Length: 260
Image (tube, rainbow, N blue to C red; front, top):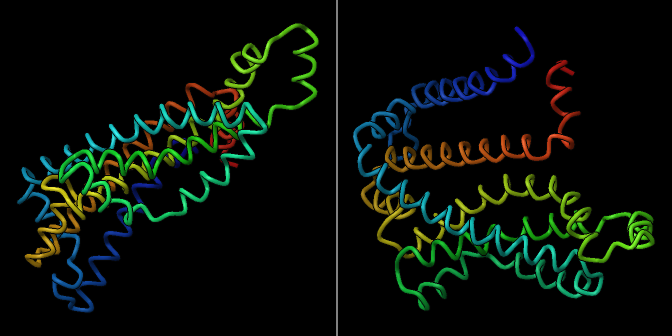
């Protein structure tokens, strides 16, 4: 088996092995479905409630992508501002770290008071939980520009804006595209947290309603759908990262090609 084929097949084999082990564990321990449903029961529930699951999953995907888009815009703008100025870096980074340390589930009730029950708190929660990795990575990529290179460019007559546009931003591109893979998964977490606290649509709302009726297989089916959406979006940004920053990922691709 070639290294590329092996890399493509192995994740599916691992997932299949996990489901088989899960099924065997439930059958061997004779666990009731309301404690831990077997994968067969989960997939049966997924097929039975495919319509409602698809509706709520699309709502969660929409709010997640909206919050993620805001985090990209805000994270890049703030990252550029923080990374371009040593004073701003030292002044704002502790504030950003402190804000990121605050549990976002504690902010959701405040957002619901301000904006009411619905999609807006989910979008804002997705934004608040996902913009920090983008900001920090963009700022780090720009701030780590070598002083010697900066001095050479200035001696050649380049302005600060030109250095940022032609050197700083391209240098930060690998950091930025790598942060997108982390941020999109966090955005899903933010949306679902908000939907479980106060919403009438979305996967989080569906899970709460299913739990109140002890439909635990439906809860697990919703979790599988969220995991599938997260993997799909992560893979999309991984492909985008390889295409847009191929000069930074050539060594990784070569390692996969050689199997080392």
